Amino acid sequence: MDAGQFLRLAVDPVRLAVLGRSVVAAVDVAAAAVELRVPERDVVAALGKLRAVGLIGDDLRLDREALRKVAASLPRLAPIDPDLIGEGWTAEEADVLGRFFSGGRLTSIPAAHGKRLVVLERLAQEFAPGLRYSEPEVNFALQMYHPDYASLRRYLVDEGFLTRADGVYWRTGGRDPTTLPGPAR
Image (cartoon, rainbow, N blue to C red; front, top):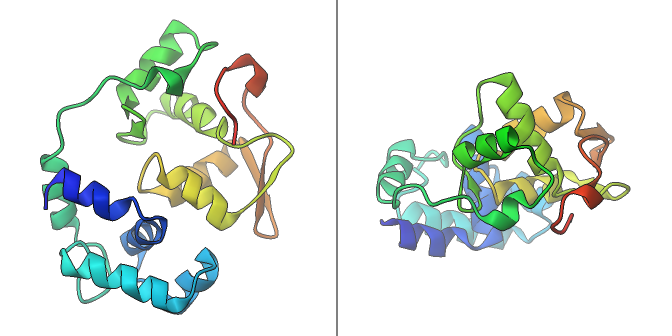
C-alpha cells in the first residue's frame, strides 16, 4: 500500500477512528460504536477494510510494520501550511511549528517540554473558548493532526489548554484566538 492508497482509506472518519483505537489496544467493536455514535456494522466494515489491506491484524491491533511501510512511501516533508500558523507567533515559535508540522500534519510530538507547549498551544486553537466538546469530538479534531490523539488530548489537559469533567472538554488555555487568524472550531 502506498501513501495515496492509505490516504484514500483513512479519509473516512470511522476508519480513521478505528485505526487510531488499534494503536493503543485491540478494537472493541461495541465500545467503538458507542464512542463514535455509529452502528456496530459501520465499525465492523471499517475493521474489514483495514484488515484487508493489512493495517490491522487478526488481533484487531495496528500492524506497526505495515504503517511504517506506508510512512516510508510518503514524500519528504512538505513546508508547513501557512494557514496552520497564521500570524501572531514569534519567529522562534514559528520555527518550532515548522519543524514539527509538515503541510497540515504533526509529524511527531516534541519530547522537549518547551517545544511541546508551542505545538499544544497551536492545537488548542482548534477548540473555541466557551464551547463544550465530547471526547469523540476532541479525538476526531486531534486525529486530523496526528494518529496519537490520546497523547495529545492528555497533554492538552495536563498543560491546562483543555479542561475535562464528566467526559466533556472545553478550552481553558492558550492565546486569545482573536489574536491568531484562522478559524477556531
